[in-house]
Image (spheres, rainbow, N blue to C red):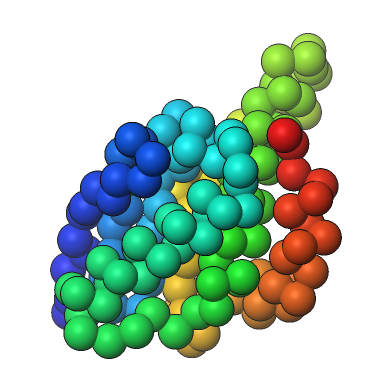
Length: 141
């Protein structure tokens, strides 16, 4: 069994924590990632995806078999869903809503991206990938 390798990739003076294992890449959704994506989101995301795929190829001597657009949308889905859930928690005094929002936050802490057959949600992100440009226009600026 392949063990996961923790790495830091540096993009625009930000240190992005990742974990790589065969067929899977994980990105830690923390302040560094959120600050990185705060400006020029589409271009910066493309740079991040390319850098992580490069690290994956160097480690396993094979390409990561997920389309760049699908990875980008999955990153955005986790980063911005997390922000929405945090906002809900800050405004809500209802325990059920707070508990639900907290579950969302926990699920978004690590962006778990796997190849087909190794990620049960791959179909969802792949289905959204043709809409990448439209989705990018909806992201917070």
